[in-house]
Each structure stands twice: as C-alpha cells, then as structure tokens.
Image (tube, rainbow, N blue to C red):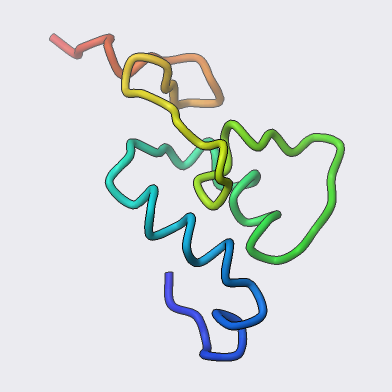
Length: 78
C-alpha cells in the first residue's frame, strides 16, 4: 500500500504495523478487516486478528483459509 505523507503521519500505527507484518501470510479473505482499519471504518464484524494493520495480527500459514474460509492453504491440489 502507498500512503500520502499526511496519512502516514496521522495514522502512523497503521503504517508501522503494515510494515511490521509485511512478511506475514495474508489472504484476500481478510481484506475487509484490514481495509476497515486503513479507511477508519468501525464495524462490529471487524476482527483485529485478521487485520494485517493491527498490532495483534499474527496469523500463520496453518491458520489461513481462502474461498470465504472454506479452503485451507494446507490442502493441496493434486
């Protein structure tokens, strides 16, 4: 993600956490949670554990799923 200097200054924790978590696994199923934080949108559906811009993000490859949580990354196509 690319942010303006003003956004980076005003939302330094978001930018810092994105950089800190940039080498951690992430799926497109978790975009809602991350984009809610980046855009400053509050939601009762948001889960900080799925938000790569959160300090509490720490998902591992073994935990991640895709296709709306139906398919594990551990499942391999033959």
